[in-house]
Picture (tube, rainbow, N blue to C red):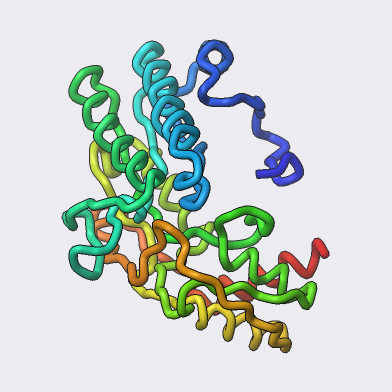
Length: 273
């Protein structure tokens, strides 16, 4: 994230969650009732190159947060999990009962984190809700990182730069708009909503990389050159979700489809270019 995107009413502490002493001081200062844990090493590609870094942030960092939660009597933690915990789907659509067989260090650490949440509930009474996100996208997403194909493509389209498409471009992911994800977190923060449970947060529809290219081309009116590249380690060819449990228990459903979301993302990048 960027400082310029922060709500001016929010108190902001710049800290590494693996820095236990600094994190302890922040918890002591704030005394939170609920913790919404979104911090992570979030790139599958980075995790395959540096699995130690991935584990240090996503596992040890989480343990620092959980330790503080139990130390201070925090009521509940909301955790950003991931569809990467499934690996190549044992069946589709993916729901909360599908076997988890992660194929990247990132997916492994997210799965391990879910087990730690359950353990912390049993050992210390800390309530939790884990939200397994699809591929989150939208305005303000970093277009310069390893992850976030829609933001990366949108910026390159607007700059009339070449577009790299890995594999055959037919790999489908379930892209969920950031405002819908934020709303799911807000619901889960309320007392009694989704306590000690896991929910898939996505749209129920797969969209291929080639389709994203075509949607952006239609929005922007330009078709940049495509450069083909091999499959990235850990990439999955087909994944989409069944989110009926979130609808039934949380009262949550996605409201922004891929066309609307891409339009909003493109407009954002037009404003900042």
